[in-house]
Amino acid sequence: MPPSPQGDERTSRPPLLEIVIPAYNEEGRLPGGLLQLCAKLARMPFPSSVIVVDNDSTDRTAEIVETWPRGPVPVRLIRCATPGKGAAVRAGLLGTSAPFVGFLDADMATDLGAIDVALGLLLSGERVVIGSRGHDGSLVENRHSKVRELGAFGFRGLAGLLVHGVSDTQCGFKFFDGVLARDIAAQLRTPGFAFDVELLARCLRQGSEVTEIPVRWRDMPGSRFSPARHTFGIVLELGRIWLRLRARPRPAARPAWEPPLDPVGYP
Image (cartoon, rainbow, N blue to C red):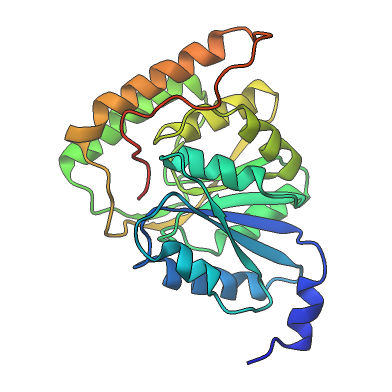
């Protein structure tokens, strides 16, 4: 079916909002997530687009994006061979050009109604708006095991030492002023699970406050996180972030990435 005249008009204008979805072997969840997101964005009164970052998947993730039907919300593919969700988000943010940008998880665990709130705050002058499952107004359906909940509690304690005043660094719903997001993304060096901590810490370091908003969040099946397998690597990532933030900038160029111990990070 050919695109509607309204779709032609929307896609002919530069997007006001671009949303990045990092994806590793998401052929099962990505089609449903894209349908939800595109339907939501198509109802909003401004042009927008979606970028899916294929993080070196071995399934049909890239093919799904490449064959996605044309519509009022363009969907395009970026490939990222460096393993890790942090690497994928970095590549996606650096591939944007819109005034406002954000990223979401492919499972769409956060209710998309929060996009309206986030964009309204950005339009009013906020520069960093994130979903928080720790907000008093949030509704959270959590099926995690007790072991995983204990691990999450420990992670929040360590992350709080680097990102003061933020109750939930890991919710996969974050929106930014586009210029700030691209500037911070260029500085990111954490490829794995803890990249959100470095991203938010650098935003705070540059004087941008982080505004947390309540969300409706559902624990979706398919998580690749294992407390036994990934805890040590995550603690090490947090230690590296702490050292990077303490270090003074050096004139010599540093490598863009360090090899991740285990490229975890996808829900």
